Picture 1 (cartoon, rainbow, N blue to C red):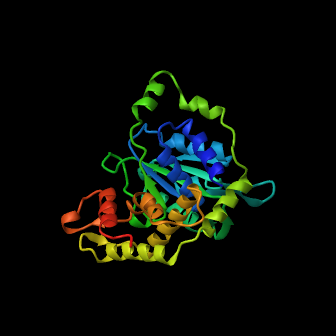
Picture 2 (cartoon, rainbow, N blue to C red; picture 1 turned 60 degrees about the vertical axis):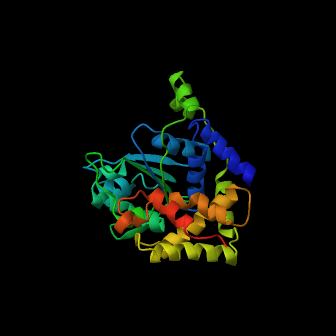
Picture 3 (cartoon, rainbow, N blue to C red; picture 1 turned 135 degrees about the vertical axis):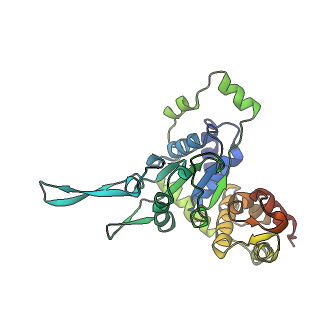
Length: 305
């Protein structure tokens, strides 16, 4: 399946230039049936990545701009009374799409942020006492601006934990930025993009991720890492069991992207920052240290063998 996944990465890279590592992580997140949080400054291509992934994968797409006055019903939908039929008719919200872009999620209130919790965790929503299934696949890409900017509501830990990965796109390299300055408009390229994969193939890839093997020695290494995070005084709290599973699922997806049906320690290392960076907190002398540095410290403190 590596030629298929490489084709997806290449197609997205034609629009989001110079960001192959981030594109591969985003695709791994989708294949692992997770959700993605992108934290970066405005204008870095967060929205472009979501649009391009939807176009290349042929997914139904919707975008919600999160603002301080956004209500849960604006995301989930609402029932409206129809006088002709004398019945309530449900009007589904944008969450009923295969790929939902929650743009600037930390600019809305915690009440509205939490409206996505059930959808992200269980692929269903309960509205007015009725449970409604969401489409398959269901992939949320949320973007947020740095929390030090004005008008933001930091995501609580329970909401952050619903995201399998968090990543940052960063500034483009010189070659990519030169193309932009020379008149290349990524938005115009989006109009000509065609799906490079059928929905059935995408679902098959997700199923294959679950079949990627993890040996006993690999699981030993994973448990040593999580155990170290829980016992090391420099960490406020360690990786939770849910975090351990998220790490393993992500490593399986990364292994599949590399063309293997088994996980190696390097797969865990490749996805570690994206999976753990928003789950670890430093304490004592490590308080205030960025998540990326905490992950690096954790990986350096545990031997592979």
